[in-house]
Image 1: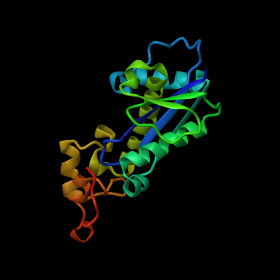
Image 2: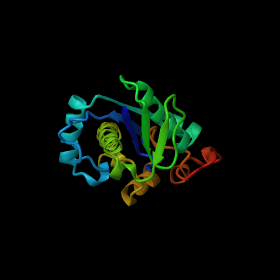
Image 3: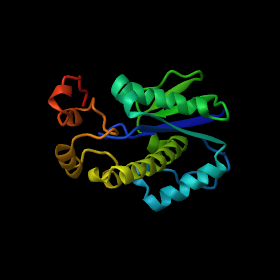
Length: 197
């Protein structure tokens, strides 16, 4: 049985892509048992585990759905699309896929949704770590081009600082205009779009 774990990072933020990862762990991985939900792992250890996984996982893939796809499809469908991309991009075809949460994307292999899987399934936790490291790095790169919003700190989440910057400067190209807090900061002529958050 070749198990792949899949998880996402970035469903909730007001800006940036949603990033997903799929990981197949080696049965003799010395870090088995140490993978946790990425939010519960200190940044320094996350980076160490990320680089370990890049070298020692049987297979991994990190993909994303763009801001445009999120706004066009909605965040749930964009997340499912990115998850499918991650599984399809694996260099080894899994015999079963375990997905964090309560929904599964349409896949060509059997899959199961596991609520809280990033805490209970090592493959999902490893995917969570890989996705978070990649997304955090991307948000720091976006911050370098759009420093007014503070992306390096809040990673696109709707903090008080971020909302204040949105009100002051309006959205940039990385903001999800289908999300209500962003839509409210659009020029009046563009506020007729449907919002979802």
